[in-house]
Amino acid sequence: MFFPSSYMIFIFTLLLGSIISISSPSWFGAWVGLELNMMSFIPLIALKMNSYYSEAALKYFLIQALGSALFISSGFLSMSFFFISYIFIFLALLLKLASAPFHFWFPQVMEGLNWPQIFLLSTIQKLAPMILLSYLMINNILIKMIIFFSIMSAIVGALGGLNLMHLRKIIAFSSINHMSWMMIAISTGDTFWFIYFIVYSFILLSITSMFYNLQVFTLSNLMQSDQNSIFHSILISFNLLSLGGLPPFTGFIPKWMLIQTMVNLNLYIPLFFLLFSALITLYFYLRIIIMFILLLNPIMNFNMKYKSLISNISMLMKTSFNFIGLLLPIYFLLV
Image (cartoon, rainbow, N blue to C red; front, side, top):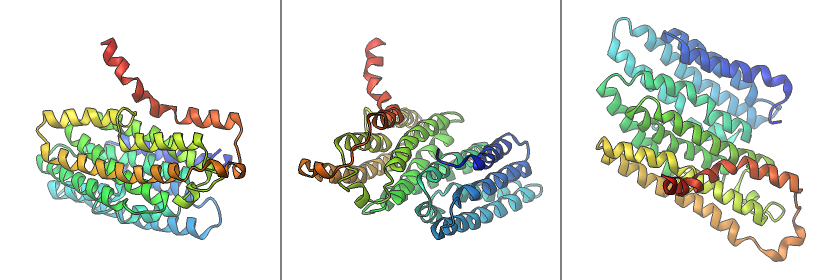
């Protein structure tokens, strides 16, 4: 189990905070839900008496407190200055989502977390702010702003992940890049971004659970001979390629659907930046894959610690979601 049973109450209140924030009829109720969500996540970060966990929890608290202060003050401002308050609420939500140019805190916090907390921070913690962001898409100016910030997030997420050796920072910049696709989806429709979010969550769950089982945090850990088996190499390669959106893996399906939507809406300029950034993210995923495949030396197999068959089967089941996209050509044949 990722978390001790005594911490289940914090996971429950974390989900409850998201539900309260989503279903609230006022900005004050949404702020209460976001605060409950934030205060429930901090104990899940500081599970152990560790300076890295404590530093990450403090950074997360300060940034989220700043975003919450801007959010609630903008909510009160809406009674007098409607449009200006919506702009500040929009910026506060971007800060909570770690979208560019407010992304500076996200890789630093991710660097001090373990893989289960990384999964929560990249998925569940972003669900409520994204739904609140979709509520703001009632003005053409805000729609143009979210398209502009999504282009910035795509560029920052792609260029920031180059030449990094820490897997947690690579996943952080990958999350920023995927956030740009979801923000574009929010500007085009109310429900499609949620499909992208669900697919991204399942793919990230398979990657984080695999890295958690292997206890790897850097590329050097990934290259160690007692971790580097042919089975793990194939699974890690497919996971990363699916996360990068390479066809025919599952990660390509929501991107392909969003590309068609953007072409129909004549959003060619944002589409160019998103596709360009996707190619760059595929580059640094391929850099990881090629490195440990080239270093897969059969001569060193005597030093490998083979895992049990049950462990390999469970790992394969966790990553099986990424292979759904391989069945997509069968769908076209049946149609």
